[in-house]
Image 1 (cartoon, rainbow, N blue to C red):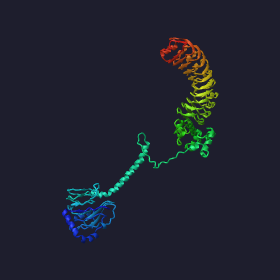
Image 2 (tube, rainbow, N blue to C red):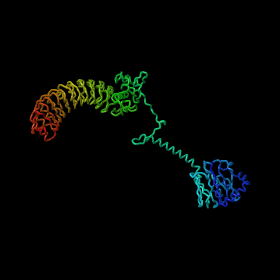
Image 3 (cartoon, helix red, strand yellow):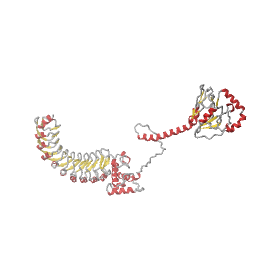
Image 4 (cartoon, helix red, strand yellow):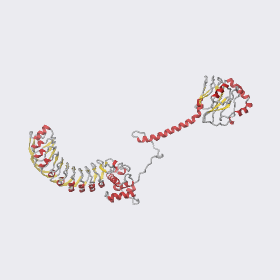
Length: 613
C-alpha cells in the first residue's frame, strides 16, 4: 500500500503524441479498458505503451507474461490507461514475486509483503526513453529512493528474485530512478524489525552471561548496578533467627530436635544442665545452633562434636569474631573440613584440635572433655585463655599430646589427668599453676616430654618422675619444687634433657648419672645443691651443656672434664669450686685450641688463665 507505479515512455515527441491520442480517446475507450484491466494496488497508476511481438514472445518464454497475452498490437492502437484512484481495489499480495497482466503489452511486478508494485510497459528494443519517478517528489533527501540525472544509456535493472527489467537505451535528461532503493523499500521495515529483535536477543544473552562472570571476578572489575527488582533464579534459604532461642524465651516451645540433643548432651555429661537454660550462655547458643540451624548434626557423634566446637568458638573467640558471625562453623560444612581440625579415617570422628596462636580469650571450656577420641589438643600461645584446667579433660583417654603452653591458666593440676595413660607430651609451661603435682601422675608411664617450666608448682616430685621410664625431656625449671630429685633420675635411661634450675632442690650430685648415655643438657643452677663434682661426669661424652652455677658445691674442677669433647657451655660461677686453671689445664686447652667451648664462666674463686679466651 502506498506504492506508486513506474510509467515508461519513448522519446519526448512520441510521448506528446501518445498523450494527445490518450486525451482524444479517453471517453471512448475508458469503459472498455476498465473492463479489461485488473485493479492495481491503491495509489498506483498504470501506463501502457507500445510493444513488440518478439519482445512479448520472449517474455512469455521466460514466464513473465501469460501465454494468452496479445502479440500483434500496435503502439498507436493502445492508449495509456488512466484509472481513477478511488476505484482501485488492493490485489491479494502473493508470498513471493508474481506477474499481473494489465494489458497485452504491460506487466506489473508485485513484491512480497508491503513492498512496491511496478508496472513496466513492454517496448521494442531501443524505444525506452525515460523512467518517471515512482515516488512523491516532495519526499526528503534522506529517503532510500534517489533521483539521478544521467545522459548515459540505461542498460538494465535487477530487482527481487533476480527479475530483470527490459533493456533500454538513450536515456534522456529527465531522470533515472534508483530501482534498488525503491524495490527494497518494502523489505527495509521487515529487516529493521528483525535486526532490532536480534540486537535485543544478543544484549539479553550478553547480560545473562556477563553479569555472573563479572561477579566471580575480582580486583579491578568495573562496578555493576544491581537491579533489586529483578528476582533471582537461584533458590535462597532465609537465615534462621536464633535470637529467640538464645534468649531462652519461655513463651517459645523448643523443637523436638532441641530436646533430643539436649537430653543426649546431659546424659553424656558434656555440659552443666543449668547452662542450657541460661540466656545467651555459650552452651545455650551452641545448642540452639546445632538443633535448629545446623544441617550436619544428623547423629549423636556429629551433634556432640559440633556442639563442643560451637561452645569453644562462643567461649574463646574475641567479641568481634564470635561464633554466630564467624565462618569457622557453617551449617552445611562438616567439622572435619575446618582449619585446625583433623578427623579419623572415617572422616567423622575428630582426633586432633590445633588452635594454637588464635588470639582466643575466655575460660577453657570443660566441654572439650567430651571429645573422647581426641588424640591431640593444642591451644598453645593463646595467652588470654584463663580459668583452670577442667577435670573433664581426664576423660580424654585417647589423648597423646596436651599442649597448653603460654596461656593464663590458674589453679592446681587436676588429678584426673593421671588417667591419661596414653599421654606422651604434657606441656603446661608459662602459666600460673600452683600446688603439687598429683601422685596420680605417676601413672603417666608413656610420657616422653613433661614441661611445666615457669609456673608456681611446689612440693616433692622425685617419687613421681622416677616412674616415667620413657621420659626424654624433663623441664621443671622456674618453680618452687623442693626435696631431692637427682637420685630419682638414675632409672631414666633415655633422659636427654633435665632442666631443674631455679627451684629449691637439695642433695648432692650422684655419680650414677654418668650412666645416662644420652644426657646432653644438665641444668641444676640456682638450687640448694652441695657436695663435690663427681669426676665420673667427665665420661658423659654426649654432654653439651653443664650448668651448675649458684649452688653450694665445694670442690676443685676435675681435670677429667677435659674429656667432654662435645661440651659447649660450662657454667660453674657462684659456687665454692676452687682451683688453679692454667693454660695447661685440659679445659683451657679445649677452649683455646678447639674452640668447642662457647661459654666458660668459672667464677671469682677460680684462678682461670684461659677464661677470658
